[in-house]
Image 1 (spheres, rainbow, N blue to C red):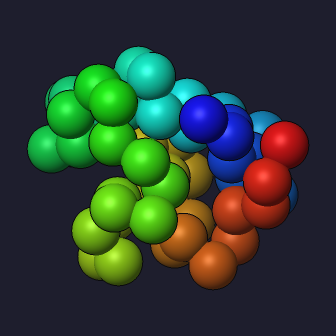
Image 2 (tube, rainbow, N blue to C red; image 1 turned 180 degrees about the vertical axis):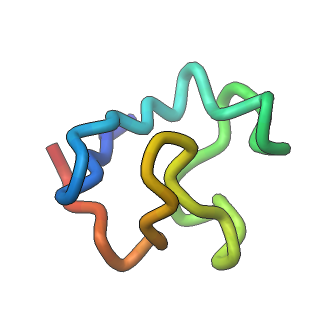
Length: 52
């Protein structure tokens, strides 16, 4: 699975890890992350992430 990087702060979304603290289970592909999810570090929305 591809990892995605938050352009403003550098946080890396790794699908293998997900973001369980914010409701995204491990194993969740980027396309399945809810559209209203935001970066847990800086609050950027999904449109501000790019593929690593």
